[in-house]
Length: 270
View 1: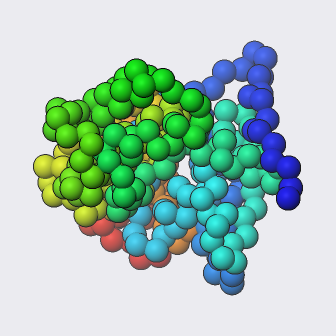
View 2 (view 1 turned 30 degrees about the horizontal axis):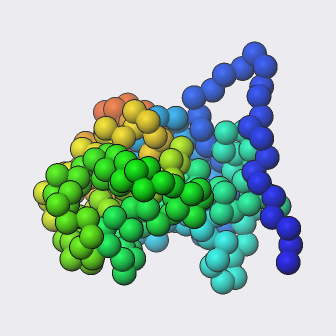
């Protein structure tokens, strides 16, 4: 078995500072013969909500899943290019993918709770990283359920099965589980697409609060949602980044005609 190596130490560039936590250069992704992502150039600003928008099949999910190498498990995938996270190139084979995924967490479109209690779900990831005392476990559960805006709803039933929660509550529980391992970046792949409006707004409000401590990358097909929460906007179509920049500027005066058409009518002729 190949020896696993931790991520290389963060690089320090003397005399130069940046607020971009992830930088992508020339990213190409194929799944077998299908060219999914084509020469992606993208910067993710730190402690902001970056919303990635675009039509179905444009490569949004493949792009976000490349940022913590979940795509590695896809049959027939080939990836080229550079993804730098805090100055470290994450696509190098010797990097420890498990370590990377504690630093860049992922929340999927459909909530994936484990067949365990609410409390055990929150602790699932962190318990594999370090040994916790009983008090530390209780503190972690409360802290992260509060951060996920779920504590008031479940504090009296922490030993109940996670599957007993509503779908919206399950999604917030998945976010609490992700927060428990203290990542720097949280990736969310259309996390509210199957939720009711009330649950959707709860998660949006939560994201706005969480960006004070975390960098958030949020894939959405909902233009109105992007308007509500995005600080930085990325429009992707046919596997290419068409335009990116501050959300306020792009919504008020996007430069590319393709971007303007999509933001206005959610239509892209790609």
